[in-house]
Image (cartoon, rainbow, N blue to C red; front, side):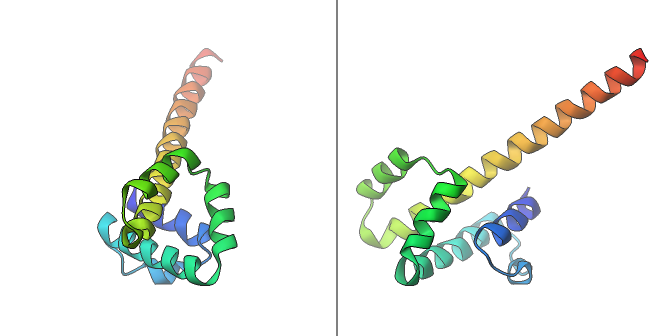
Length: 111
């Protein structure tokens, strides 16, 4: 799943996939993503808002989590929300593929 997340994030955050090659754990991925969020907050806030919208991060949940944390943790909270949403997408894509393959196998047996 980590490799799928890295691939999705490289296209979503518009970075070279090579930059993600040295990441081997989800915690490292979260740290990298937190740094990307920090950069966007400082230099491209509108782009960050568009990214959150495009990824479909739950706005109410994000606002609540940011309100619960101090300003220094906000970037990490945003990064966690992005990562969680991407993990959900990977899960559902894999589940859909799995169900699709099962349906294909059943259809082949009928014909």
